[in-house]
Length: 65
Image (cartoon, rainbow, N blue to C red; front, side, top):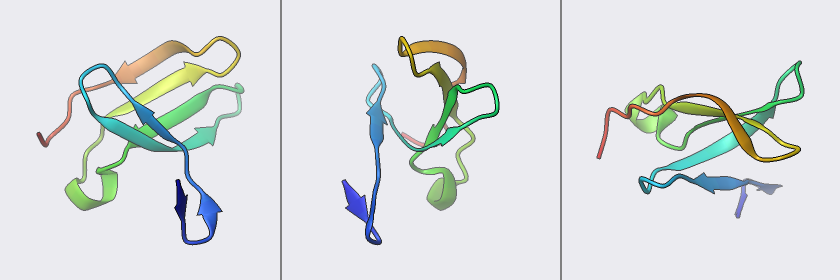
């Protein structure tokens, strides 16, 4: 997916929510934020190890359907 001339990656979880804007953290893990973070002020996120796509940490309680 492309937005504003840059490539955007989307992650879908098993509950149907979308996450975007993966940020590489200092520990080389990726932090994904809910795609409704700005519009709905949702604080859900997932932190993954990019080598094996294993979830390290998450807060998957969303404030929207």
